[in-house]
Amino acid sequence: MKESHNTYTLDNGLTILLKEIHTAPVISHWVWYRVGSRNEIPGKTGLSHWVEHMQFKGTQKFPSEFIDREIARHGGQMNAFTYLDWTAFYETMPADAIDIAIEMEADRMSNSLYAPEEVESERTVIISEREGMENDPTYRLNEKVRHAAFPNHPYGTEIIGEKADLLTISRDELYNHYRTYYAPNNAVLVMTGDFETSEMLRRLEKAYQNAKPHPIPECTVKPEGMIPSPRTIEEHGPADVTTMQMLWRAPAGKDPDIFPLTILDSVLSGPSSLNMFGRGSVSNRTSRFYQKLVKSGLAIAIGGGYVTTIDPYLYTLSAFVLPGQDPQRITETVHAEIDRIIHEGITEAELEKARKQAKAMFAYSCENITNQAYWLGYASMFADASWYTNYLENLYAVTTDDVMKIASKYFRPENCLTGIYSSN
Image (cartoon, one colour):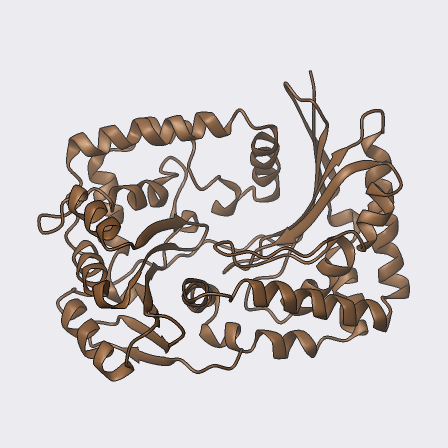
């Protein structure tokens, strides 16, 4: 993925990445802020996600109803996402209408209102969203094992926040979080599509140059090490099928270990897409875990994967247990298969297949203008844009020995956390 993009930094610290793509008269405009649940403390969880919601409630210049109406009127789309390390907003528009998105994002970088009545209305919405998620067995299990995997790190708390915090967070706390982290020197603007770079840079500089920079608090949270000892967490509730998760610590996103992990993931459970905005689909039926767990009649379905983050996160294997089967058999089978890789490695044929599968997933996730803008911004949140542009080159440099080493380093049974959700 060597197509060029250009990088600029305004006087106020705003980083701008521009990539011309002239396949259609469309432009995708993203603003990424380096703030997510990693920047929250106990008692104030969910602030970043709630602030994202409030950013759609308008400014003096762009009331909320105007934003929705104008984007829709021009046939555009807009959305936002809050994650562990970042919050992102985007608009994909016809090229001749992109100024609406530029001016609106530039204004709400500094001038969102946070009207008290809007805060209270959104409190109800977010609490309702969380309560709905709590009805999902997979969510309930994931929340429990995340807490156990990160006893001291904010990654252990769901991004939406704890319900007790959502009930008590004030308007001033939300507004202060916004004013603390929403600044040009804490943001990356990405634009891809049908424009001329020098002319677009002038337009962006005019729109964003008045945003005032300020010091951003340093996040001093310490990364978690390996899961220190094997542990099984059980959760019970209404369920038609038993759900399992097995988790190991995964490397940080900019750690070179990510690339052999990508190959190992493809070999074990089938290829994953790191692009949570635009995903492709490649069958996992030839993966080792599918053969050992699903084809053998132990599980209904399996899936594995990881995400790239600032601090080390998790590799997660999920399985739906076939009724009548003992989850312990799944645990033993998984560890036995990983042990084979630790001691015997993988074949050159498996390596080549995994490369091709990962390459296909990567290609699917770059298939349109919006997805390419996503990748440039996403990589900039845990590393820099070159991580994305050099992705395939780094992937194809992985050897079978690298895969064996990564399995031994991260995937030993003594560093595994297991979660099981079953019916009452």
